[in-house]
Image 1 (cartoon, rainbow, N blue to C red):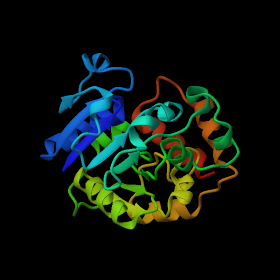
Image 2 (cartoon, rainbow, N blue to C red):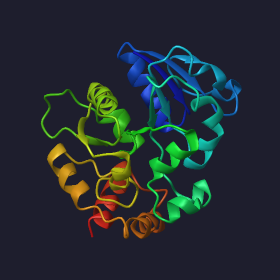
Image 3 (spheres, helix red, strand yellow):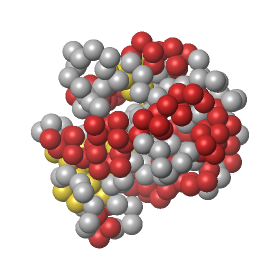
Length: 240
């Protein structure tokens, strides 16, 4: 398949490697300009933003939530058969405060509204280290699972197959309105769960408590934490 990825941060760059290594054609763009990709560790072709939607099947957006509106002029008019994937997670201290999300609009609903079309929420509920290093073959025991939400069943099936291809089990977490269950502050978020445990975590998500639990993790975070420290902190607070 042919992929376009906007963003070369930890998730975007890791996906470029995994998809390229799996034999897919990959292009990567930066919202600012292709010059900002010069020293980035990416696989595939670096292109200008306006060229990212040319001749692709799937467009992956891996940028901060508050940057999404800058893509509306490009994405609102692309063919409907191109699947748009949102990997972002909203953090007020980083993304500025977005009032609609603060008032309870699921993050990917807000993103869809800015872009003028539905997205599929995926690759957002695992840490970049997990995505890069903990994928396993499909028949592996205790395979880590990812949640995928969206309004179009066929689009979700395609993305779930891609998630499995790069090393993870999948759970259909519902329509886009249900995607809050895999946002920061919920038991499903960056806790490295198996498929069965992820089902339970999604069912146990509490929308009202999620923002305060998200902020509690940030308050207790240390730059000296290892990856396992971060996962354990998430498990402890999000399942309290």
